[in-house]
Image (cartoon, rainbow, N blue to C red):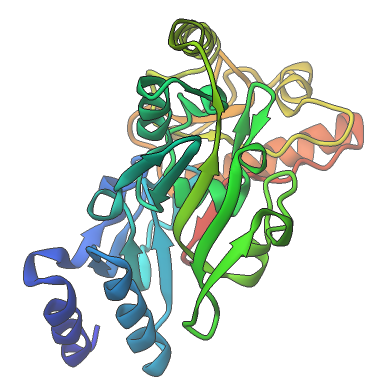
Length: 303
């Protein structure tokens, strides 16, 4: 990484917020990934804007990271700049039925704040490990709820680096997609609109969903969550199970015995192990059922 560029990042975000050759396994829920050439933790939207401007100006590849869920980073790492919008940008403000949330706030933290305020609508998100920014990009959802149900507007940086505020109707939020994802925008903040609710009922629903997750998902192992998108008319986990692939493994990567929709890191998996496993599962499922499984996990780096 060009030293002059690194110095500029340090001047913007602070020396302690800029890391060189930072192992990405420390920043993904899969606990897999080689080093990022440069890892920057901006502290506000102005920092993000200036850092992205430098990347564009110098034609340096960059990637916006939140909590590192739903992501597989190459064993060779990423030869560019990782910009982590996370704890430094996680402010939550509440006004009536509206929550204004910075992109780095964890969904689970936002859901807990909603509970404290007696606001209903985010119960589905209480166990999703990602940030609000990532959830908007992917229109994250679970247990019948989706981000498009609660998002009123989103503030983004567009591909030219301009700040734009997009209303719900403009976001084109669909199954694991959005205008933000299609255009490569960077989420800075979201306004969520919730409803009045009974705190006891909200808490009970969150606890019910937590029990379902604990009993059905392999939370004891590192993973990126659901590995495959839901094929129309099918469930990916059931197709994999019915293909006889429960517990199937390649190196340290394994199809969870608890839930076949998850690929887990049993302790020493490499990104190559995971990719080989995914490809073999895709081939076997297609051969048996003529259904093409599409990964929900995002891939970063050279594979």
